[in-house]
Each structure stands twice: as C-alpha cells, then as structure tokens.
Length: 306
Image (cartoon, rainbow, N blue to C red; front, side, top):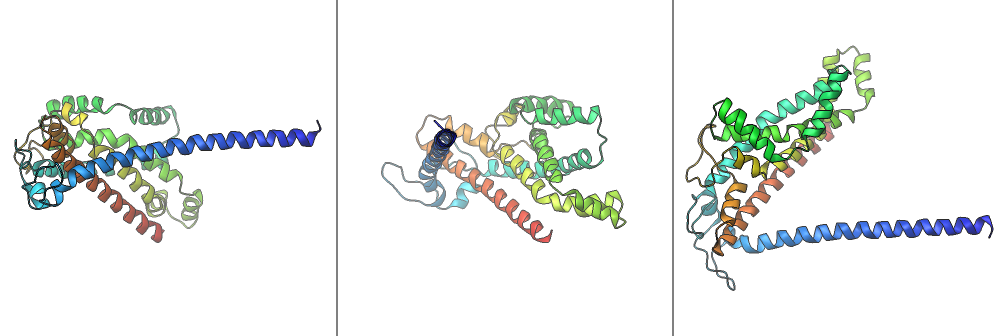
C-alpha cells in the first residue's frame, strides 16, 4: 500500500468521524428544540383561552373572564376561574425595576474598574476567580443570604426591596463577567488612538471604549434579567409571600411574583388551575421576550452609532 492510498484512507476515516459527530450534534439540537417547542405548545394550548377569550372548547370548561385585562388586573382567588395575576404581575415589575436600577450601575462600574483601572496583582486575580465561581452558585444560597442580610440585618423585612436586592446579588456576577468580556472585545487601537489625540485615560475609556462596549454589556444585563425574572427559590427562601391579595405600593410592601404565583397555582389539585397557571407562564414568557426585544433595539442603535 503506497502513501496516496494511506492518505485517502485516513481522509475518508476523518470524514466519517466528522459526519458521525455532526449527526450526533444535530440530533441533540433537534431533541432539545422539539422538547422546548412541545412544552411551549402545551402551555399555550392550555393557557391562551384563559388570557384571550370567553368560549368553550372540547372538555375545557367555559371561562368566565371576558378579556385579558381582567386576568392581568384581578386579585387572586380560591376560584380558578376568577383568579387574577394582578398583584404578582405588579410585584414582578417592581422587582425588575429594582434589579435594573441596582445591577446595571454596580455591574458596569465593577466591570469597568476591573478591566480598565484595576492593577494586575494577586488581589485582582482573586476577585476575578471568585466572580467566576459566584456565577455558578445555586440560587438557594442567595435566598438564604438575602434572608440574613436584607430581611433581618438591614431590617427591610420581607419586602419587594429585599427581593430585588436578593436577585441583584444573584445576577451581579453574570453581569460583571459579561460586561468585562464586552470591554475586552473593544480593540486596543481605540484606546491608543484616543490617548494619542490628547485624551486622558478617563476620557478615552468613558467616551470611546464604554460606548463601543454597551451592546455587549446590555446583552449581559438581559441574560441576567432573564434568569432573575424566572427565579422562585431565592424569593421563597427570603420570605416572599405565596398568597397576596393587594398591590405593592412602596418598596417596603409585601409582595409576590409571577413564578411564585404560578408555583402556588400548580400545587392545587383542581384541573382548572392548569389553565390559570399556563396563562401565568404565557405572561412571564411575554415579559421575557419584551425585555429581549428592548435589548435588541438598544444593541442595534449603539452599533449603528459606533
């Protein structure tokens, strides 16, 4: 057997291995997508009637709520056909406002300092290592930390402020790491060009580097919010209520959130609660998609300007 035959044989063997690997990869992706779409279809098929209309379909009982506004604004009830998600929806909005207001300045500021200003020493490397590790800590741990620090030590009680700050701790490592990666992706030529034209280091970073990195930083923020908006365990552990029949009007008010409300509804034995909980999941998915759309708009705007 000559060298050309050996090369052809090894090439064919590599091609077969690549084909087998791609086949397994596509199969895994297909299974994941089909599973996700099946779950989404099941949720929408059981919950859309609870949100959108008042009619009878097959074995599903006729819903007595006439339009989506009733479900979004009504208080919770022991009757699954009258239960609304108003307090939980308001609580989720409160949580997201607090999380955004506290996470973006802290996360962006920490990322800018660590990437652009911090000295390269053992302390900085220790902080960077711990940030990476904190991103993988289970959310229950943050719930216990929120209970100890914000509920008891700071005296905020089991309020929406404590819940928002607990979720801030949860996503802050993710936001810092993603923001640092966005800053790293900005070419050094931008920094060097600004400095060569007479800018100070502060001016070069905040007028050239940071605006160029904002699309990536916003993406990291949205990833963190996407995780925070669906979290239930840390809120339960820090003391969020499962049944709330009033709207939170201040940051120190008691609250519940959509994931906790859905979790509470699913625990009831009556089959009608399945439609109500599915409607809550649809609403949660809608909020998540709205945040992603807003992040996409912000990304496109800054990418055009820079």
